[in-house]
Length: 313
Ligand SMILES: [Mn+2]
Image: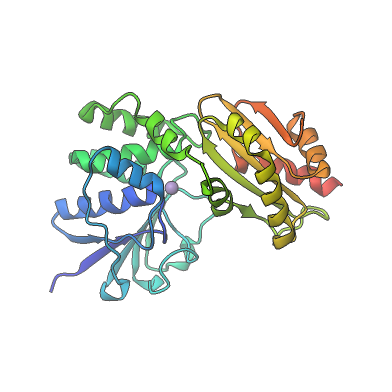
């Protein structure tokens, strides 16, 4: 009997993982191999936005990896975060774009890790190389994944390869000019308890690391209209950050919002001590817990700067 290949990624995949799962399994099927897409857990809201906005239909199912002899991991390369039923020895291929990875834990895998903006770029390049065309439904997911992961080509992680693939897909499909804006707007509705949920779901604590005598943790939100939101809901944010600080035993905690249209960061700090540290490192000025800084700065760029300062103090 013919072997079936399972194509999957992290549990609760973001749009990039989601796009890779469907694109890469379609690719193998086109080449005459039997590949089955599997989405573990609940994909991110952003994927739902693209599905609904563009009327896309995918059979979204979670398969049991124990029934497959060959497993391909996309947008993932780590034992943490994938289905615990995946036997690492069965993983035959990994396609990912993370510098920090665990690919050595998969002894039989052909590993492709390249630091492009989106893993979906790596998968789409395979279609281009083989001269395979991508159906519009899949192209829309892949295009969305690239826009999302590169913040519409503005994030530092963006490479020429991401731009080229997006342009190639756009040539064939003529995506609407407001594709990115609509996607970002869909992330910007933080009304009611959505704000706190978002802040908590994306919180990255570094309690396992010692930055001098300090313990750091940050939340990052990408949205449109960040400054208005931060000013209107500052008290809630400050109190939630305070709660997280004591829950996780951290002392330097803040929220950074990347405003995708105003081209600035908005930073909310819960205590005067945190304000002092951030003012110094990021050269910003706080008024009532809130500061702005022009230009984009991702959390992964801020953390090393903070670390450097904190180990001195
Ligand atoms: Mn990714």
